[in-house]
Length: 397
Image 1 (cartoon, one colour):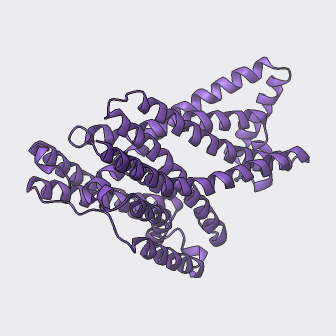
Image 2 (tube, helix red, strand yellow):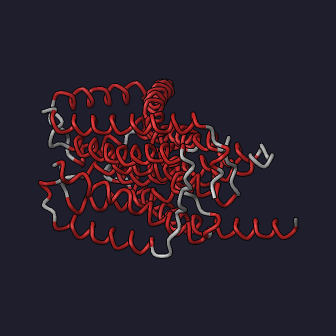
Image 3 (cartoon, helix red, strand yellow):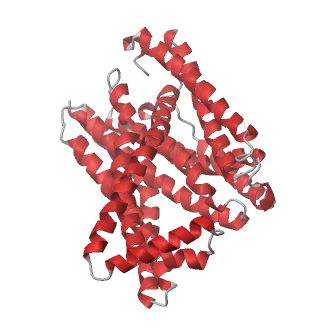
């Protein structure tokens, strides 16, 4: 049960105001997607409406949490024996609808809820199963779910500008190193000429794009950005809200892990809406992309859960555990992204008639598959271990 009595009234007022602002901003986002001619009926519109729907739902949740929290009403626990079955049935239904939906409908506003559903349901399916392995008395409450998800969503807004700056720094660094190497100046000149040509000509085909990705300069920038910058930034911001929540409630280790995973859930839903929209207009290609995003969902939730567990130890005076957990999450996230870059980069190198490229691509995809299988197992198994550990500690006290 939440310790509502220890939370000051001003906290609920701020929560209510934040919810109202989130609702207003989400409605504005959807309105812009519907009225701006250059955006309407495009991929951007689908993304804006999808993100707007997430913000609207969380805004309503924050508004309700603020109002009911001021009245000291208890928040229900997130625990249902059949919640996973409902999520699975809804997910299967959405996949069937997606297959039957004409590709030309993908950029229409009515398609945004379907796109959002396929981005969010795998995450809620995992969370539902996690609550079962954690147990009824160690799960999180509805208010805690709304707060942690909101923190994860807000982290995406913080991460985007920082990662853009990081991308620029990585590009400058790779170009500088390349210029110092033999033949580096010619490589940079050729790359700049190609980019200039693309800026004034129609978008290139897949083969030409892959041939440019095979450039050591491009691969170097992608590797640094996605395996170093992105994990450092994203894992830092995902669970910051837990530091605020911990001022009034410091849960057990199992619940702390669920808090962190829920932060990752909010983050991955927004990322799934944006990154999963690349293949809209190609039914099977889009479904394949959303399937890949479902795998990435488990990675983001596990990384968030690891840092959440670090917060749990931090609150128990083991301060060293939080930076160690952050480092572990960054390494896991970075390894995941490195395999993705290897798979894409290897395929690109393979198009230049270099057999080693396909070997690299297969290795990247193989390691990615292993991580994709291990992540959900860890999400379900870690709460079981933490639950047993806490039970043993309770008995020994």
